[in-house]
Figure 1 (cartoon, rainbow, N blue to C red):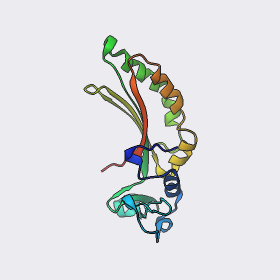
Figure 2 (cartoon, helix red, strand yellow):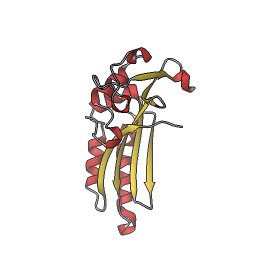
Figure 3 (cartoon, rainbow, N blue to C red):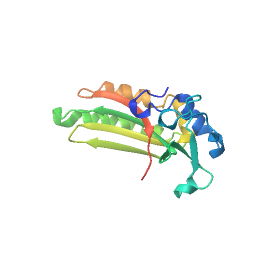
Figure 4 (cartoon, rainbow, N blue to C red):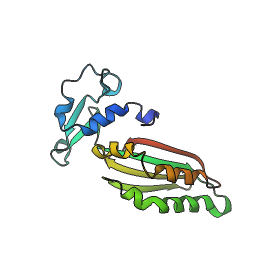
Length: 174
């Protein structure tokens, strides 16, 4: 299931799945009255879609509009935690070892565009961000974001790791 985070609250599972399965802008033509964030109040669907050619991308592919000036074609899943500086940053070392154990599986997910690791030494963040085309995201969601469960359980078992969380959001270059 899609998380109910404030950042992704504008979407429902059905809205994302319908949007990612839609072929071209015609799937979003003549929507019912738009509600909050440009999402159809009746069906929960984004109210518009624009071809990537309009944005300098590949022709034939579609962007999903959240608003007229905020569009996406990529959805990311983030796995994150806080690590500790204790014992020479041992929890960070163990978190990296945990992702090393599953990275081949993560990169093997159909459609993966990229996997990034973000580490902040100031706020002690450790994040893994996996991005997929919107049309491939639903299948990964159905597979429970495998190997997410294995990775998250591993993080939760590391001494010094806290605030283990996941989040889904759009991820677009500017």
